Image 1 (tube, rainbow, N blue to C red):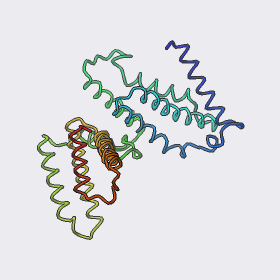
Image 2 (image 1 turned 90 degrees about the vertical axis):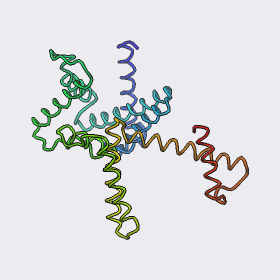
Image 3 (image 1 turned 120 degrees about the horizontal axis):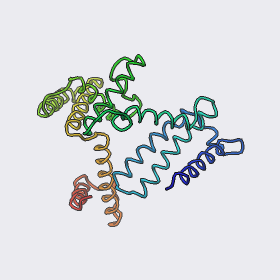
Image 4 (image 1 turned 135 degrees about the vertical axis):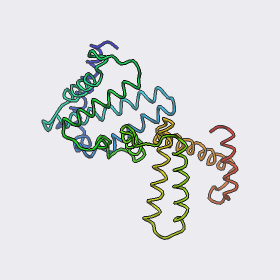
Amino acid sequence: MKTKEFASEFNKLLYIMEKLRGPKGCPWDRKQDFYSLKPYIIEEAYEVVEALEKKDMDLLKEELGDLLLQVVFQAQIGKEEEIFDINDVIIGITEKLIRRHPHVFGQEKIDTAQEVKKTWEEIKKRERTSNKEGSILDDVSKVQPSLNQAYEIQQKAAEVGFDWDEIKDVVLKIDEEVAELKEVIDKTDKDRIEDEIGDLLFAVVNLSRFKNINPEIALLRTINKFKKRFNYIENTVKNKNEDIQQMSLEELDGYWNEAKEKNL
């Protein structure tokens, strides 16, 4: 797409959003504010990831559009309240990209992706210091899913040397946490059980980090796999004119194994 054509389409999107928020616009759109839209931002981001998991490029294109809409929506509200507009958003990210890529827009020489990541983090650290921020963990968003938070927190801690030396140590830690959970699982202390489950999940996230696997995406993949297999069970039972609620676990598990054999 040519730059001129892109600008025209982008301006059209901005115009539509402004009209939706206008006096004669949509009552639902007009009612929204920065905070009421938070669930939709999260939802659209996840739907982008789900489209990638499905390797469905047409769906990905659609979901990216939905996510872009959320950015435009927020920017329009900012414009109305005279706080910022879409140009401020674009200028901000443009300046950040230039600032954090001195090997592209400056004189610094960097050859590997690993060096790029290290430089990016060093620049972020300098920015944080100049803004008088405290902990290196402050960069981790507190509103993202807990698995993502755990992953990023562990990465930040590892950058300053607070990390296991080998993956076998991580596996031993998981074994330790499983043993501690077993000790309390039959007790009535719900807080203690919750603590131990949290410790186990945190340890499993550490393992995923050592293998460069994002735990949030790994769990999403498992969720989608479960849904496919469960749908197979539902459809199989329905085709046999049976009542799923009247079937035994052994029967349902048999259909589950059939789904596995079909690589669902």
